[in-house]
Amino acid sequence: MKLKINANDTEGAAGIQVRYRVADSGQTFAVSQVSSVPYYIEDVAPGYYEVGVRKKSASGKWSEWATGFSQVCAVPEQFTAARSSNNFQVYYAINGDQSRFQVQLTDPNGGTSVKTFSVEGTGQVAIPIVPFIVGSWVLRMRSVCDQEASPKYVSEWSDNVEVEIV
Image (cartoon, rainbow, N blue to C red; front, side, top):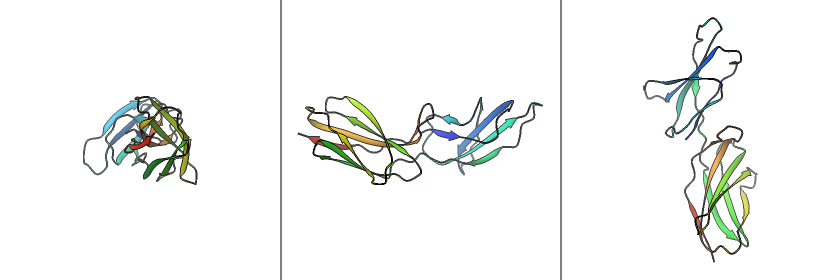
């Protein structure tokens, strides 16, 4: 999973440090010098994190740590898919304020594509089935918490759902 660390009022800082550790673990913080926030830490274990940011003034003094707790980019609560006419009908429920999600489709020949959608109040979306590719398709879904981040701030993938196309 990716961990996003953000702070206000870091403009003009001579330096910025971020730190994180698993919440309530008593572990030593991992501390990094960064050039800007938000800052994304790749490949951290899923969980809830205690995070902090501090800035260095022009005189070289570090501020106190501004601390808080992470918001995890949550995996969709519900994800199912079925064939409906010439479409995969995808049903989902997302817990959080994510405005987008992605569905990965893997065809029976191993080809993969990822489609990005806006979260709608209906909790469902239709994805056209590629003609003439029959067999077992595998679909999975993930939440997109920050589309503008590079790389994107996304959740882990959901469990796979198989849909047979004959």
